[in-house]
Amino acid sequence: MQKFDRREALKMMGTGAVVAVSGANFACESSSHVQSGGTPQPVAFNTPPDRAQRMAWWHQARFGMFIHFGLYSVLGRHEWAMEEEGIPVLEYMKLDKKFKPKPHFAEAWAKLAKQAGMKYMVMTTKHHEGFCNFATDLTTYCAPKQGPGRDLVKSYVEAARAEGMRVGFYYSLMDWHHPDGARCATDPAARKRFVAYTHGLIRELVSNYGKIDVLWYDVAWPLDARGWESEKMNRMVFNHQPEIIVNNRNKLPGDFSTPEQHVGGPLAKGDTRGWETCMTINDSWGFNKGDDDWKYPKTIVRDLIHCSQGGGNYLLNIGPLGDGSVPEPEVHVLTAVGKWMEKHGSTIYGSDVCRVTNSTYAGFTRKGNTLYMHVYYWPGEYVAIGGLKTKVKSARMLTTGQNVKFEQTEFQAKFTGLPQRAPDELATVLEIECDSEPIQDTLWVREDRPRDGV
Image (cartoon, rainbow, N blue to C red; front, side, top):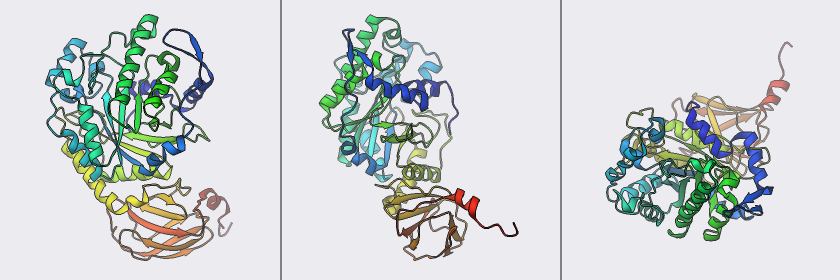
């Protein structure tokens, strides 16, 4: 896991993270709201009530590709270099002339996503640096009017659709480039201008590219939901895209929450929204030529299984170079993950929340009464599940189709006659049929298991 730093602190300010801010987010639904004219209005809208219908495809998908692509991709020193290195705005702007993605860059992204077993993609349309990757009438600081000479978002949308991918847009509310991006917090006139600009850019995104499936807001600094007029923002988005889903980073609950760089879950008990862990393949979102801390394919598979186990999605990031090409280590990792998904994707897509969670060498997913035991660290000879409260009917090794013998006691289900070496090095899967939804209780084992001699 990435260490907690200043960037993470700012991210949390924008996400409504953890319990305290979560409560504040929900309070926005019943608080007053300042319209662009400055008149407080009652809040009556956050997202439409048909959430389950709009999110059905998303829960089925489970696995998506995040793409961080912008001027920082040319610099190659991390996506936060402009702020963390104190680069002057005029100096940083010179990168826009060097930003020249090669032809068909987006087609390569979409093919890689499909090969990896991903079902949707989310691309940065504007990151914190303020540069727009799309055609806009509101600023000249955009791809068609600078180095790229064309609409990069359009290329991405067309490529994603050609590979059958659902299409998502990332949009950073925070803006280091716009003159009102910071002073909007203290200057009412600046706030009015900057909110109009922000809503205008988002309106273009949801109006000009056909059907869009996901809008992924990021960092809400320096305003709150009232300041951003987030209710009005969401209403406008849904007016243009009635089937879209939105996240929680414009300081409203949205349709799903967004734990970052760790496998998470709902923000609060009883929260019926979805959740999606977003994570990098190394330690950077944008291309960083010095960052070689690549995750292993086994780590990626394990994180994907853990997300699916908890009923969440996994949005895994790539950081292309300035010409749009994907770093070879990222291609290697995603190719290996894709080969595993070819054989085992059925255990991930459309999986249900799984109440079997504890093992020292395996993770679990579930579909109905079928339990999938994903063994990462193969022990050889046999595997066992402690505290499985549900009766096992049959078992087989999904990788090979081989039937597996088992014996079950009150406290243990043991699967025997397994090969000494793992049939699949990333995760070997046992398909276990139960007579009802599989449930595990290891505390019961600890407390009630007979202790000889005691």
